[in-house]
Image 1 (spheres, rainbow, N blue to C red):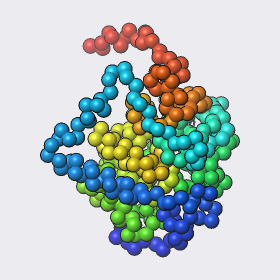
Image 2 (cartoon, helix red, strand yellow):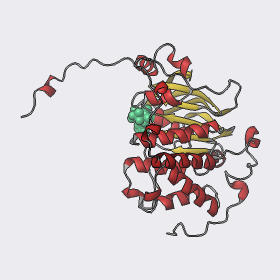
Image 3 (cartoon, rainbow, N blue to C red):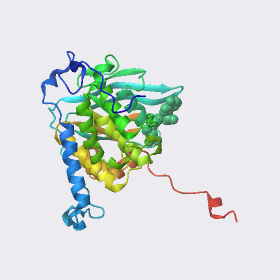
Image 4 (cartoon, protein in one colour):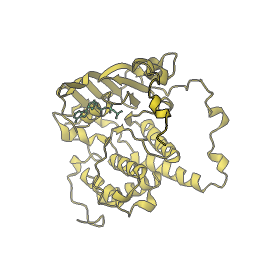
Length: 335
Ligand SMILES: Nc1ncnc2c1ncn2[C@@H]1O[C@H](COP(=O)(O)OP(=O)(O)OP(=O)(O)O)[C@@H](O)[C@H]1O
């Protein structure tokens, strides 16, 4: 297997996500290219500086930012209602045997949105996101990314998407550096860009010291971070992240959140699924609640949660909590 030292294969520039728009690019392809590396580099500098700062108080949240118990977080501002739709899901369904995992889902996500998808275990979130990213074929319905039909024109659509799938299947016999290298090269980046972006991403995610180790030897959180770095290396217009914060430590999660917020501020769009209601309320401007494969609520965070918290609204739509009755046997210990 060639090492990252190997020269990059020549790739037609017009076929690269970082180069000129493809002939079938959507109407807004003239928009300035997303400068994800700049965003990541900036966060990397901030992260390193913060780590070196002697005054650790500087990293504590300002008192004003503290959330009072029971108080609702103000919602992030959602894109304007006339902002272009970057992800359109129409009448999407998927059945496994008798089980309808995704049932006629409709969703529209606008450019510049930080969009959260929440739902109980088995609600259909991963199934939906897998269909959106071209990993699982829908039974019916359609998905458009940046105006391109994902299942009619998968190669073009995938150039616009960065994916962090739920069950990570990485080439884990590669080192982190090799994995980043091949992710970039396979997305059509040139050698120099891959190296520069890899260094920026490694610094931003705190993976510099791990780059020469096999990914198979990474912890769960490190694996998540290298997978996310691979998803971002080609500056996609849309990042689809299934449980990105699972197994990630709080400091790394804060770094990651900052990277994603800056990516969104620069015109990117993030769709993520999470069970962390607090995190969704903190970072997302819009949200959808999926239960039993159906979207029961969607819109801006304030539209969905109303006067309640997102967690209260979620519990209400998911059918309420089950009282912890029975299981007395659990209190009669085995010894
Ligand atoms: N390949 C498959 N074959 C059969 N059933 C499947 C398959 N993939 C998913 N399912 C079923 O589809 C339903 C939705 O699963 P999915 O993984 O999309 O849920 P989820 O909302 O992502 O759950 P979680 O929060 O637990 O990750 C579940 O009942 C699951 O068992």
